[in-house]
Amino acid sequence: MQNWRSELNRLCVLLFLAGVLGYFLGHISLVMLTSLFLYYLINLYQLRRFNQWLSRDSSESDSEPPVSVGLWGDIFDGIYRLQKQERKASSYLANIIDKAQESSSALEMAVIMINKQGNLDWWNFAAEKLLGFQYPKDRNQSITNLLRDPRFSEYFHNGIYDETFKMKAPGESNKVLDFQIALFGENERLMIVRDITQLHRLESMRKDFVGNVSHELGTPITVIKGYLEAILDNLDELDEKWHIPMQQMQQQSMRMENIVRDLLMLSSLETKGLTKSQDEINLQQLFSEIESDTQQMFKDKAHSFEINCDPSLSIIGKRSELYSAISNLVSNAAKYTASGGQIELSAHASETSFDIEVRDNGPGIENHHIPRLTERFYRIDGSRSSDTGGTGLGLAIVKHVLARHDAELEIESKFGEGSRFICKLPPDRAILHPDGPKAIEISEPAEAEGSE
Image 1 (cartoon, rainbow, N blue to C red):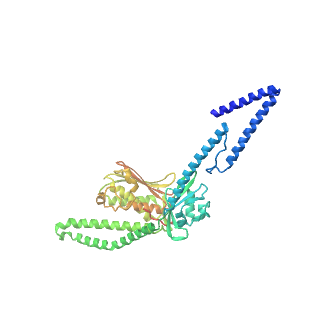
Image 2: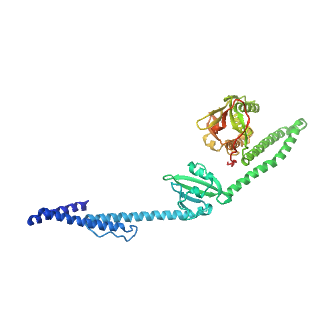
């Protein structure tokens, strides 16, 4: 600011001296115009020096500013300071980027940056090993041109990345990759790719092991249960001290049989796809059948059941599986609801789905338990197993059955106020058909992966 005022003062002094000289020469206007022209030429020269300096590579450390005084000297020095600050900041950021790239190159997972046009911007060395990218050939190439699986293209363009995507590695059918995408910046994407071949193999081994063990346990349990039933038929011939142990052995053998049965069903749900031939199931008939069976199982509790469903409403699916899923929900409601409680079965369309709902006025569930309820053998209270005789697999079966029908389970509960279990099916699985259930042909869905 000081030099700006000094520059104005110099201009005023120049004009004053030019005026005095012009007065003595008798040409005031001419001398003043000549002085202003000279002042203009000097500034034009400084502008030329300024332009020449800026045209140099400003990233060079020896790009010194032109020597000058006054206002132009301040301009040169100020811009030079900004250049030094910019070079320092660029060096710092470049150092951070170099470190990030160096550290990411040591990762076994692929890290890929994708710009808002969907083209490759940068990737680490692991991406070249897992996905076969080549630098610089593939830079700025569309990711969907390099990964041509239609399912990946649908996942990428869908823009909803709440869940990861799994597919086989390009050109390697024995390798399984897990893709996870996060949005950042202006619709740019960061994609992480992991090799989960070993985890996938272990999961397959686990499924095979559970299925094989369940099959192998079936025969010995049947034999044990048969002998126990024969002994209990002649219980009066045994010493009284063996009465209670034999009854408990029978209860536990029945419980083990139920566990094996549920494990076999889970194994079947995980390894077999939904059959092409599915059923048109009248919901009111299905609800009435489940109500009757549940009342028979828990007749000592005298629950009150209510069914709210259009008599002509049907859904498309595998009847045996949907019966098992809904029956599990109703049985759970009956188990944990006190005697004389109320259980409601209803079916209705919502804004985005067709909902089958099981509601009870039981003890309810605390919020922190709800996300884990569909895990195998997860129990809110370990003592409930012996009290209710459950296997701990019911909700896991429900989850898998619904996944095979393109549906999901939603749980709402308030501790002490009851619970709602809602099966949210695609709207196109619900139809009004007054002629009753019949077998129909629909396109075969993809085989369930059986995730936990």
